[in-house]
Length: 211
Figure 1: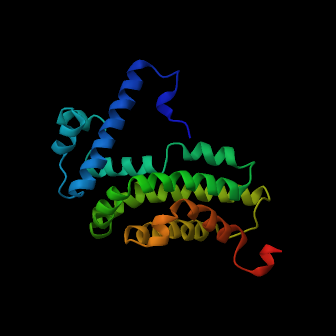
Figure 2: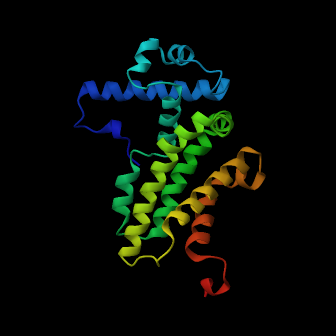
Figure 3: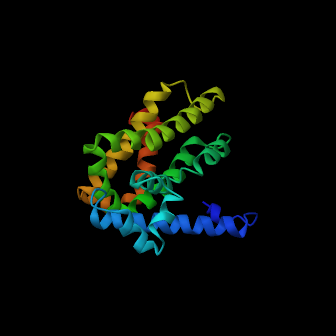
């Protein structure tokens, strides 16, 4: 997927702003991975990004906002609405596989970060609520709209859209947790997971699905 920072119509000022924001997120990810979310400080992140502490607040309100920004980038959340719109006329299973292969690759690259911050999300009530509202629910709503549109187009059968979306999201989260716990098949065959998951979702396990 193309990087929006490469847009030739973007002004030099906007490109520099995007580049600085990306550098801050890269630095925050590195600090969170090495120190954990709770122990990390804005000063640590600013030092690594080679910017003043105050510069970070021009882009992000606090550490939570940084974390949500990092997770949104891993999930390529900014591009997702356009991808879902473009995918409506294509094959749903093929889109699922391609989209999740790329995102699981990003998750693989960010495993140390996820391993450091996910426990904080689970135990910190405020962090958990904000993480859910700003990240998880946003993705849920986008996917719900996509599935509902696919149903209306007759590309997939009528289903319980909200629950289906959450089952798929839960599968992804569960797979990620198993990988972090050291599950060998997932660690060695991570790139194959989207195809297996898509087959389960779109074709099921019944033998007549293979006839």
